[in-house]
Image 1 (tube, rainbow, N blue to C red):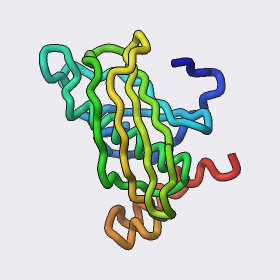
Image 2: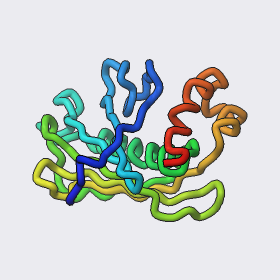
Image 3: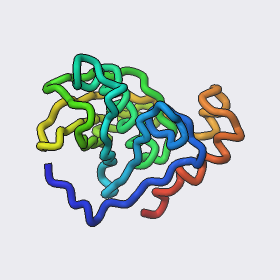
Length: 170
């Protein structure tokens, strides 16, 4: 997989975020950060030993979380909507190793309706081998609808709006 790192732009997140996947302040989280080339969303991370399943293999639940997170952020950044996972399938192709630099890629595949999108996520090893991939169906909504449905509080939504709108005009 060829990624032009020189054109990648950092996607900002909310300060004090405690999400297990992307929260910088979560002491036991993955601390995923995201970048984009405007077509896809990327994350580069190393999974710690504490998240191993067998021996030094990344636990399947952690692998699934990484894929869910990259797909969710693909919806947030590329579509400027809140996305919640409706369903996802994961294909575990090769073992992922803790302590190894991983490349994660997410993209929107199809907008099925105003409220439903198909998204994909892929995880590559340090040797650029595709090790896991996911296909997800995400329900999408505005931040205001997310508040109305109880997905997030109004205070959190106010903090999150700049993150949601950072792709406007890009």
